[in-house]
Image (cartoon, rainbow over all chains, first blue to last red; front, side, top):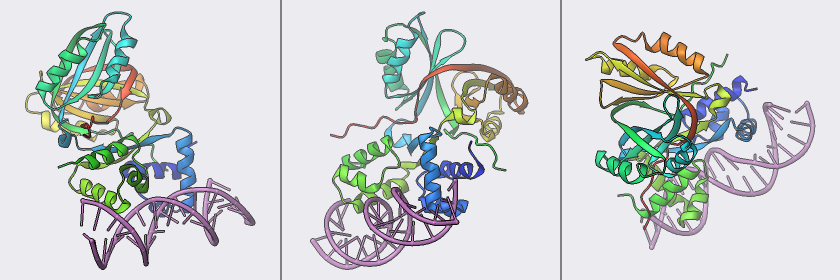
Length: 152
Length: 152
DNA sequence: GGTGAAATTACTGCTGA
DNA sequence: TCAGCAGTAATTTCACC
């Protein structure tokens, strides 16, 4: 369903998403029109979900990352999940196995503003019982890239 | 240092990174050449870090997300952090407060391949002592978007 | 910093293979 | 699905404000 050429195209786009189409076509050895057709098709099929700009969090006072476990009363998880997702500073909201519990990823300016966010906007969501925060001291890797199968 | 117009440009790019420059210039009311110059400058200054394609993990058998706490012997954290970062299936490697411990984000096909990855490639990194895995049952939100300040 | 025009380059829809 | 072409559109440079 995804052949080698399309894989190659995706790999190129993972490296550098704003590359001109012609350049992609040169690299894969197809005509630009053919490459465009393949990309459009993958966009339609939902293989390609979109394109994102990656901003430097430090430049916007969002360098402090924290992961927070948020526990809820039974029956409140859908509501709480939705409320958490509404908060811009929260980048990820996952419901995880184990205790009835969310794991969320938060970006804030510093630990002080993280504390504020927790107390003023998370702790008072209806159904939230407890939170447990781990702050990030240093980040070794942070990507959304997916390992693609080898082209043969 | 970042004025309102550049902020507007970044907001537009966060919505839709592959938008043509002319379209951006129409929306912010500048000439295309001016917009181009601003974008180039922000790229040079490291405000814009790059552009990414967002692929659908399900189409590549990477739908299963898990977060794993990885504990290390004292003095091994740099080494372990580097080794973990080399593994493609691991998207994020953070050193977190509390116990000498990494929190990593993993994408695998299913829980079986997650188990394999843990046992065959993580547990036998020199210095790793224990792992504690939380698998994600459902994801409510997953973005790398940063909240940008209001343009006034 | 910005504009606007000119040159270059890219995109895209067709057609036929 | 592809290449090639033709028309349209976008990018990029540059002289000038």
